[in-house]
Image (cartoon, rainbow, N blue to C red; front, top):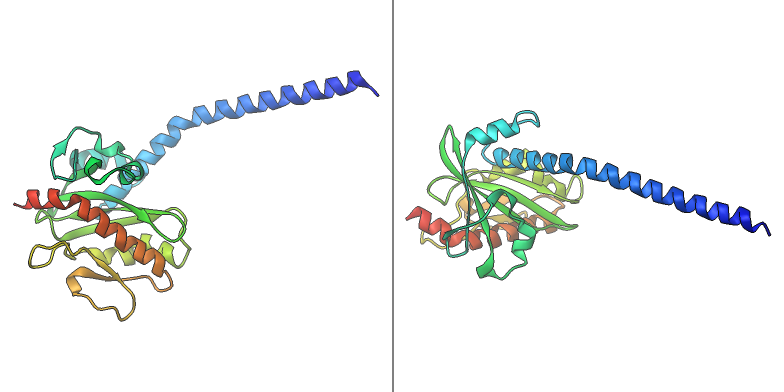
Length: 232
């Protein structure tokens, strides 16, 4: 047996593994800042899209700075509290007790007046879904919506993120005539509900549609006291 040869091979392999690991770690660290920045820009584009403002990677930050007038955090009692609205992690907040949740709010000045943008997060068929819903200053009427997902089925549940689906939400109401939070029904074919509280679900994407419906009800319920206080 050639022990020296085996030792050399083992040492060579170990050194190469260490060098490759170090190289990959260096590349990862060098790309981290860019990845964070890209994520922030994408989020700003989504927030703007909820109020029907188109933006690109190149101009999103400029438009965001111009249009978003305020960012703040409220609790489930509707009280404004300390916090960084843009960097609130909704996944972590949804895991907290209801009374401990941090709820971000973004105020946007549009050509149609001031809008209040609320971020949402829920669960679809294959993973998380999320979005932003913009409300008129009556704190009841939806002005616009933008949704996205991690891994819903193309052509089915993934359709929540296309404009044809999202545009249905404009003009819908969160509260009924008695002031009760009704939210929005994402309806299956033939499912009845008042028109102001109903959008058509996605054919073949029932689980994703119902996940989105639950997300809307759960998160609007969390914001309910804020909406009522702001309205009064």
